[in-house]
Length: 205
Image (tube, rainbow, N blue to C red; front, top):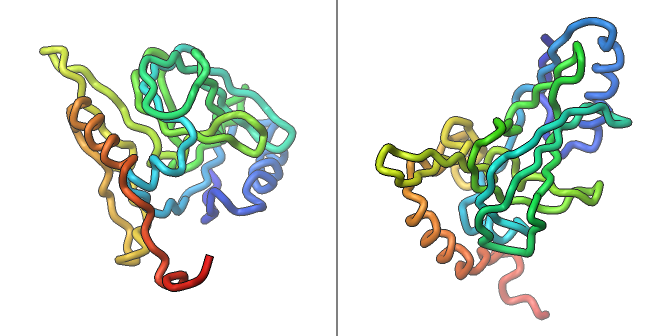
């Protein structure tokens, strides 16, 4: 196992994975990039950042080598749209995955099972396809109770993110929230103005 502190937005991130994976490709290995740092985003910030927000079910997954690393491509059947105009089948690219004897695991990157129902916040990647906004923060797992009621839990309820206000790592994700309550909170988030930057207050436009 290889562990390293590396930020997911670091410009050398993909080259790092490509270099390590190429060295160990011939053997069965697991490459782990630990200590991923995600800066906390509340629901309003996620809603502003995402181009598309949907409730969807994972129907297909494939992992393959790309020029610089391994990527996983998950296909989701869109069940409900909250924002944007998604295709009926939404393909999401995520870094990492397993190809033959090589597996790349990146802390903070969600993984989905076929048939799983989720809420996804996604945005365009530099490759022109879609990625999940802020990885674990933009993924919410839906589970159904015996009564049929749907509840959801954000991936960051089990993953610490950095809060720039307190300068501490906290696990503050949404937990076990009824789906209807989430719809209401999301509607309110759409109407929440972005925070004012004190440095820009009073500046002329």
